[in-house]
Amino acid sequence: MKNNTKRILIITIVILGFFMSTFNNVSAENEPTIEIKPEFPTPESTITFTATIKDENTTDVRIVFQECDANAGICFTKQNISMNSVDLDTYEISFTLEHSEATYIQYSLVVNSNEGWKTYLDKTKFNLTEKQNDDNGKENNNKDNDTPGFEFIGLLISVIFILLIFDKRKR
Image 1: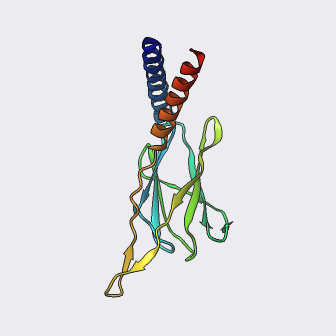
Image 2: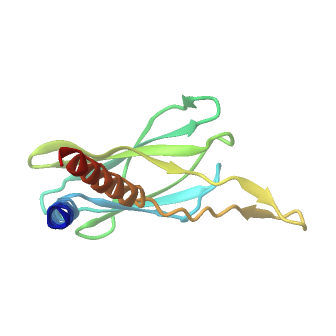
């Protein structure tokens, strides 16, 4: 009985490890990446998008973004801006956010190559931090340093426990 439980647990971990390593390698090689500076932008601040694209046939790169207010449940006018080529693989654009009530931005990267227009990172959300004043009346950025991705560990543990419960019921 205990051997079956150990086998199920080991097989589950090996299979999940295999799929996670395969998924990470495939997505990392083909997908463009975007870096946003500053790391913690505030409403009405100037932000810079830097896109890295590993396709030699890229002719045009555009960023399509909207400022949104989660409290009101609305998004403001969508903007479609052409990015400037910095070098062979890198494109960059800086612009100033317009809405003081915006709580996040959502963006997509649109790339034109020999294969035509293709959208990456469709409607990716990026939270803005609130402007806060310190004791001297100067603005401080509230830096929220959350690390996403730990939800998967909870899911994995839940699946293992469910498998163990079903295994015990069969006996």
